Length: 617
Image (cartoon, rainbow, N blue to C red):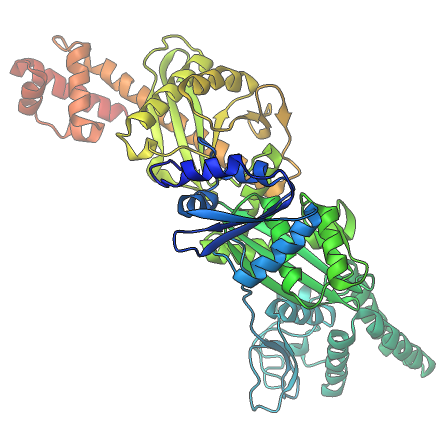
């Protein structure tokens, strides 16, 4: 987004001031006309950084453009080095809380783990304590960790999660699916005594309080005692429970003895919005999660770095290890800042494989789910767009996507379809159909060039709402040949939009994304792969349906010319007037006479042919 001198008349003054600015490191402080601080930033070279805000023709992100349009003046503070500038920036942001910096507000409440006061107690999540004589564990500041812990305990110890009341509902109905898939012990069958069940619930509560390692140690001792007493059936049950805990521990993300003092940070971006999630592990268990809605999105790597500086700059507790889901620009410098802030060793890393990668993926997934609530989209849709941007090397997450496909029958009825996906979903309001006008023989490249020219000619003319917006990405149903044919058209028209082809395999299934010279595999990015497959299938369906309609219409028109006195022009006139075969067959001979401009005898013959065609259909 561009900011003109008309939008901010102070830009010429700001450019002149910046031309004289020092090349030293430091902080710059942007102010509005009321001298209120609206943004604070740091730079290792003040002039080179600040000039990017006020240079003519600079295409800013939306948030930055809004800020630049309000800047009346700025101050600066020179430092000895970039690290000092970073420390000063954090301090100034904390003090002034500028509108256009990331300001952290988490979304927290309190939750409890409830063990109900019943003959056969249930382990559930509760938002508040009630006077019901139940046992409440907590409070926890993270509802997420409570929900995960409750689900894990119920699954590992095969506790019932249905709404049946015990012992009242013993043997009243058949056991549910959970019993058959070994997720419930089948209390409803009446074969589990109250004492045995109570012991299992106690073990589940201990599992929640102490973690899997302690639970396994205690169960091993209990299994040994049962074997010594020759109670082999009980020992076998405990053995199975130990195995269940060990299996769960291998895949769960609640307990990990190696995560003594670790935070896992994930960032999710969707169009103009972003969210960060922090999973906190202490003494080998997940103890809390916080989510932060960061407002308008900027460059994802810079936003993640700014979040770390503000979160840990204001936060009392800096962990020994921070795991990130993506790289940040100045990792070493941020690490140094946090070490000095915490007065202890702090390491920041971006896992690339294994269990730690699963944790950062989980943090990112949580951020996506939280963001989905804010922007009215599902977490999967947000993740798909993020994966797509990363795979194609885009600077921002695409919000508005257009895709084109050509469909023809040999060299007849050549058409194209344009579909639009907005925020990961089809927006059929802006779908467009094109009848090819300048290409007379089968040539997909030439047809695609014509369609793109017409689409952006309409953009410049501004006469159609569906063409009034520049897409974030253009997809073509085809390979690098299509991209190389269309890119010069965009360049000539001054359209700077990323262009890619969607490549299919021999079975007509999406295989890769094509640039002008290579192919990008997206098969490992499941959400992105599913999205582009959906886009490609949708544009193909839309284009081929339009082509089929055109072919049927032209065949119908040809049938009308079999009537003496009805040529191509009169047949086309009838088709254009009535638009559908249903409307045409409802017309009387007299009406056909007036529309086609023929005598009544020809109109009657025409009427008979129309109804004969209808019978054939």
